[in-house]
Length: 158
Image (tube, rainbow, N blue to C red; front, side, top):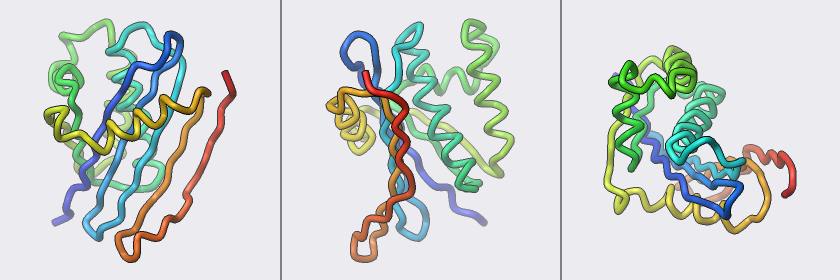
């Protein structure tokens, strides 16, 4: 039986025109992945929460991680994943997430209190301090805590 990797997601308001978010993931062998990103502001805070889910989901798919449990402090995201017909304004975003889910063998989502989402919250706060739009993903292995850079993508400066 494949053990699910836990991913925590957090979004933080940033200035007036952009938003920051972060995610962290720990796999069964002790590797820790994390990402932080700043992007343009969206239609609503809930739209940016959805962006904060779609990006790490696509990152996991691109890294061929096939079993993941998303944990978020946004209960509306969990509700969207379970009751998509109640969220017609988000139909496009929900459809994208459903397509991403097809690439996973085992995927689930659960709500956690913000107090248990510290790592993702810290990453989102760090993203907010950058002052430009970017995406960053890295990995930390617990054996010696050696950092291994996976990728850095600077989209454009504000």
